[in-house]
Image (tube, one colour):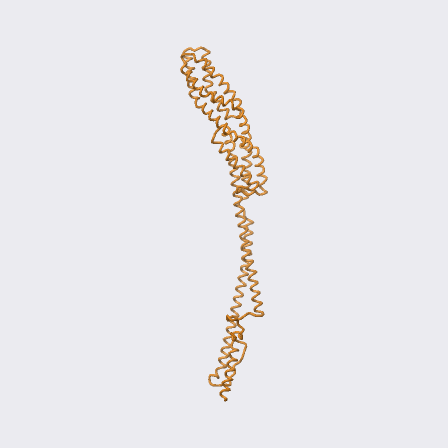
Length: 399
């Protein structure tokens, strides 16, 4: 251990850097830390624009899908509302779904909810336009949905009346033909004609009360039939030639009379429901589908792109690559320096050993006057020890 201390080495056999070598090693470590940190930092930053672009595209995709669903719901709104106000039971779930789709999409685009990010400032005016159009329509849809039970009940009654139309018309035609061939009176022929006429007008009035925008008109038609039909049946009942057919018609009318009365009794709620449906039908015809289409087109225009993100990623990646090159250059330069230093040290040690061996050549022949050169090389301590040994041998021989 003492000998290693003389050689100026550490206990592991590696020379301990001192002075300029230590300062140089410290400078190399600082350079490696700097370039390595910059390399890692810019390498991480290079991915950030790409990640941000992917997140933005996913957000825009959700926004566009919401707008597309709103556009589809708005385009079907008029048809569904018309079917609902006509009492179609299957139309009300569709109308409720369309209301939820448009309201949910607008809420997400305006405020950010339901998994939909808030729309950008550039698109917000279009979102606000759609929302302004939708607010009164939404109120009308809510009102119309409140009449679901009443309208579907009326539609069932209309179907019950229409189911008897063919039988009513067939029996009325038979009565009229029988009276015409049998020489019936003008009074009887008139009432038979009433039966034929209202066999179609009563079901038609019931249908049109629900399906047409002016239920008052068709309610009057239905009410006229409700007055004329029983009167015609009463007049023709005593006529023997048609009594059987008149009784069958009377049975049919008795079956549909409650349905007719219910329809007439619900005229006011029906008018209210149709008034509520009017804004929905008007908005669904043109305004709302067009505004939702513009919104979807604007959101689709924001998707894609990524030019600036790609450019920024390329610049940051180039900077990371440059710092990686600098880091590698420092490592290579240091490795080459260490290799050169090691080669120089080895060559010098080899020369010192050869010189020592050459000087000790005479000692092998018994020359005790030899003196080895004590240098600062690795052989210096050995030469000093050999000189001490030779001196002691010389003393012994002299004695």
